[in-house]
Image (cartoon, rainbow, N blue to C red):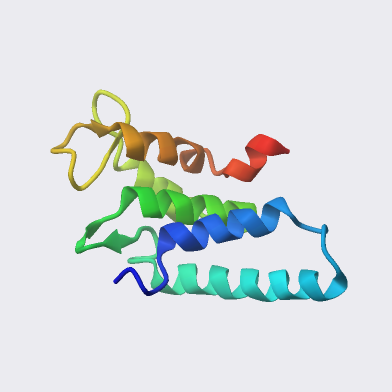
Length: 126
């Protein structure tokens, strides 16, 4: 359902909040803090087996990577997600997605490598 929350969008929102930390008024910072807490809670409560997400009835490597990066940007540990992403590494390198027939998916790999490191896009700009 594209009208509900998703792991990828929530992860991106967390990275956006982290990238503008301490740049607003007191009211804006309070609103970001509240939204960050709610987003982290949503991700941790909706992760399947606490280590990955699904979309459209399939494992969602990309969404899981974005969730992991968002959690990292929010200062949350995500070792379980990192461990799950490792299980998605193809024998030839890269990450296997639900639709890549066992081969590395370039798009999922590009999004997932930073998450595998336990980092986020925010770390690239700091």
